[in-house]
Amino acid sequence: MQVSVEKTSELSRKMIVTVSEDVVQGKVNERLKSLAREVKIDGFRPGKVPQKVVQKMYGARVKEEITGDLIQTNYFQALQDNELRPAGMPQIEPVESEEGFSFAAVFEIYPEFTLDGVDGIEVSKAVASVQESDVDAMVAKLQEQKKDWQASEQDSQTGDQVTITFSGTCEGENFTEGTVDEFQVELGSKQMVPGFEDQLTGLAIGAKKTFEVTFPEDYGNEKLAGKPAEFAIEVLKIETPSLPEINEEFIKAYGIESGDLAEFRTDVKNNMQRELEQGLKTRLKNSVMDALYDAVSVALPKVMIDQEIESLMKPYYENAKKRNVDVNDIKPATTDFEDQAKRRVALGLILAEIIQKNEIKAEADDIRTVIDGMAQSYEDSEQVVNWYYGDKDRLAEIEQMVLEDATVAWVLEKIKVTDEVVSFKEIMGPAA
Image 1 (tube, rainbow, N blue to C red):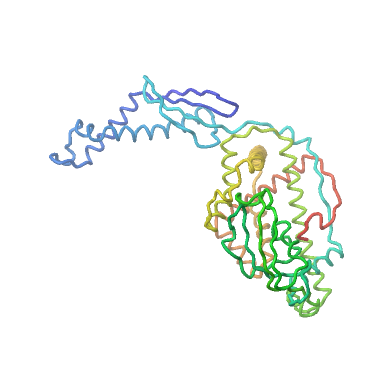
Image 2: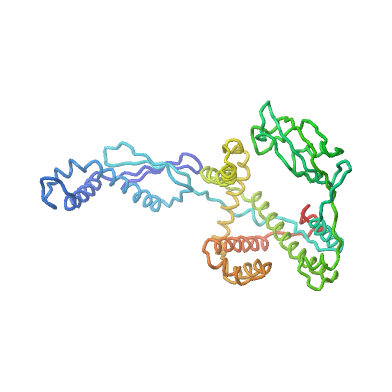
């Protein structure tokens, strides 16, 4: 086997592999002899078919099979001999050669880079605690979640729930498939297209109205994105919210059998503290990832970026399938995901390098600790633990999580970390 490797760009390689004709013909003859003992041809006894007859009938097919086998075995052997690590599948095609069978393999290799920039990284570590005012806000949120709706004869206002029928047209085409009946909208929830809920404020039961709003530029349906649409609505019902009293019955509904308010608030605070700890951990991890991405320069194989973009777009394909719509109606352009894909590929390469260079491992005890922590939120924690350990893929996901956390911990030991005091709401966001 003869191998030549051409560097066509920083990461692209063109490798030409040549196998001598003697080797090719030897393998073809060997395969034909084997066939001669097995094939059944009219006029010949089994195992007595002449080699020339077998050659004539099966020679072309056998040679094609042999060259396919040679491509596979010699491609990987050539990579190993030349210490090449391909980042994706190669493009392979035969090459004319007088010396034997030749093929060209075009592929990208994994980049080589250093971690020298890691030592100069600085990140801020958010520090927060759960205050009584945060607990007050959470209790109010829980109260809001259990609100009832009472029929109202007053004109609609923010906070009310309005039941409507509506239809929508854009550029003369009805995109709601006729009229949507009995549709509920909570005014102020911002669940609808911007401006839609505003048009429902100040209306009475039975009111009819036609108005125009413009869909956002980033709206999921490309046929509607950035375009004005006309809606025709009719108000069927108006309801106002009624908050439940925070009493013994309310508290028991959240698992506090005593119905005691102080115990309830303590339980709420403990849950908030657990969520806050996870939020702080996630924020610090993201800060480390951002810093690594900025500090370590690494060339990115295009094939890996394309694969990542395809992975990011997968939910759009699945969504289209579920809704039975043309994927092109909801599929964003690949350029929308390019920056995100580049970041994910780069960080994957950087983390893999850190893990390999420093022999970082996901320890079994750490994996069990994470699974036990996740199981605490469930009534039958042992069943949850068994669920994870009973499936290799699920366990591998936890192992990857632990490995990333161990890698982040290694980075934190090497860099400068400054504490930054923030509020619970800043960490947990609007959901808090």
